[in-house]
Length: 152
Image (cartoon, rainbow, N blue to C red; front, side, top):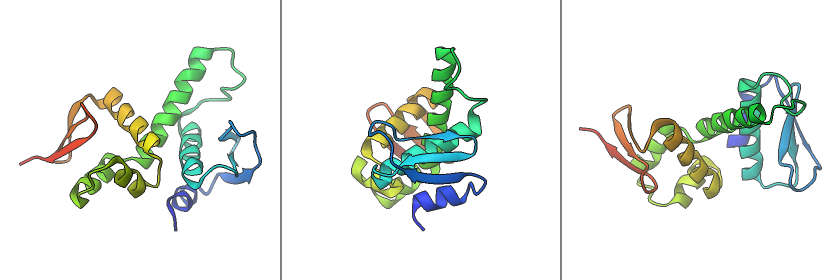
């Protein structure tokens, strides 16, 4: 089972439809149905589904119809951050460190995501946790990329 199949299987209450959409639209959720642009790459579909499940988990009401642009932006950020944390977990980054991965490409491949999505995920961790933080026996340094050290 690939990562997209695992993610969708963990939310069986949602319906997933791969359909034709305008090229710039990756996907959206309406009620309990996630619509996914069938023409996008596997990785883009995975990233999109993670964000749309993030809307399901974090959003209140239909944010498209609201006039409050600030509230829309906040809801989008919450859903996107949820997706980043779901696909690029700190414990998963530790696995990459322990496997000896040295490049963004290797880490992105491990998570089945694009390098750009990985960079955005690291930016989210910087914003939420800071440039330096500790997590279950490891120290993370996000000052210039990603450096992980095991604490002694």
